[in-house]
Length: 268
Image (cartoon, rainbow, N blue to C red; front, side, top):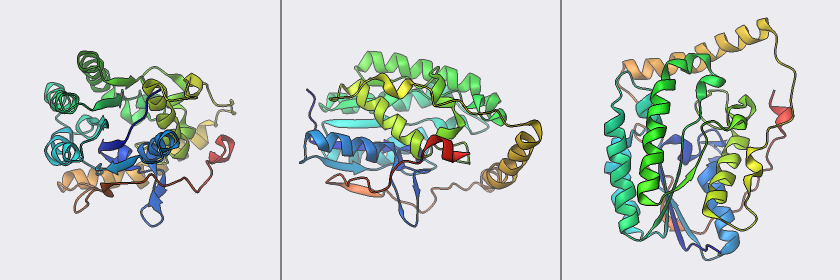
């Protein structure tokens, strides 16, 4: 039975917890949710989260790896690359090189490493379809590197429930509370935690498909509310993570969850 003492999460907005809570009340996220589950097996668990939204694989490697290793973790989660995939120019080989360097450094330090592949976001966001070849290419490298370094890999790509829009926040870039819980459950399974199984792969209850007018209205609202501001930041050379630092830079006890998950049918 695995039992961990020091868990450190590195990555970008998904690992920081964007989409699960807010900046005013605090972000939870899949890594926080996983830490609570780890603490159920070891109440002495120390948990740090160094992830910062907007960071590329190169930035995560340069800014987060060394501080993570200084905490002497026995478990590290490393998820990086989505911000690279969304940029006009993306070198998949370079992204994979940064991932490999982090996987290698952490495993050589004696830590177990966990990660996951990226889902096919084009299934619920038509504007993301041009990213699909990049997602497929990077996932292939992530699988290869995970096998080489003995990384615990949760397979998100090709698991139908992962692309259910009810698991995602309105911006379609970040998981919502249910999605973050699914990610935590998936990683718990590949880590072999007690009571973890593949139940996270089960589909949500079906719901009626929206009509054409509702779909068009939703797409236009998304373009104006999320895509437009995102493109504006890119054109100005800015990032959502500018000026931000890690929310949890030191090892601290995992904090219990206080808010119940919304019911899938209540998410629209």
